[in-house]
Image (tube, rainbow, N blue to C red; front, side):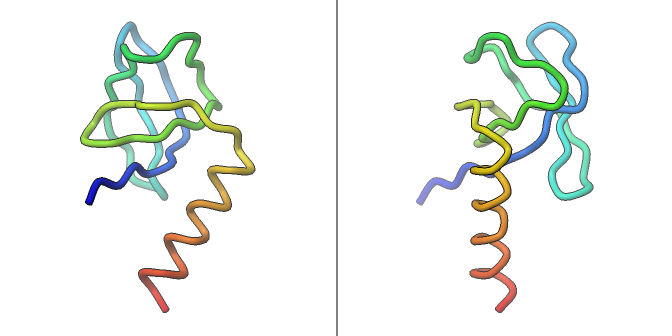
Length: 71
């Protein structure tokens, strides 16, 4: 099974972005997406951004994941 996690973009430098994943900062390759900027939410899979999503969708998905894994 593949799982993509919603993350918030903190910084962008070229084809890489620093993202915040529930308080954990890591690098993401954003070369497959266009017009990514700080504050955007993306789906991250295996270190690669695969889709840009809106904040509401990101928060709903994170809540569902939390409910599944922590209850």
